[in-house]
Length: 161
Image (cartoon, rainbow, N blue to C red; front, top):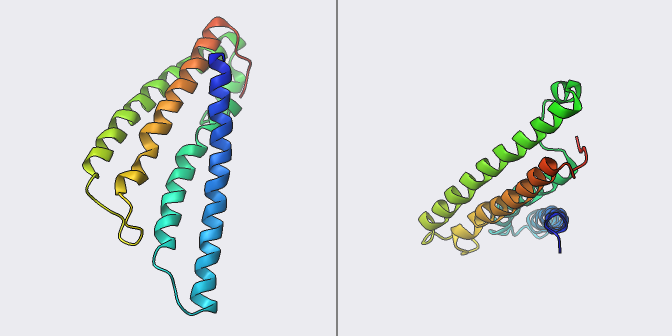
C-alpha cells in the first residue's frame, strides 16, 4: 500500500470515527433526556461520556481536513498567489503542521502520564483514556501532512484548496 493511500485510509477512518462519535453523543443525550424527563431518574454518566466523545470527535474529525483541503488558510491571499507560490505555501503549511502535531504528540504523551491515576467520577474510566486521542491523532496528522508535503515537493499533489 502506498503512503498516500495509507494517509487516505486514515482520513476515511477519521471520517467514520467522527460520525460514530457524533451519533454516540446524540444517543447519549437522548437517553439522558428520556431518563430525566420521562422516568424522572437522571443518569450520572451521560455528561461524562458526551464530553469524552466530544473531545474524540474534535481530534478524530480533524484528520479529515488535510485531505479535503479544509484546514485553516487565508483564502483571499492563497487564491491570489501564483501557482508556484501557492505550492510553496502549501508545502510550508504541511511542514509547519508536521512540527505542530509532533509537539502535540509529545505533550499528549506527557499529559497521559500525568493523568494515569485519575479516574472519571461517574464512568470510573482512567482519565488518560480521554487524553489518549491526542497523541494518537497527532501522530496520524504528522504522517498525513508529511505525505502531503512529500507529494507536493515531488509535484504529484493536486490543488485541494
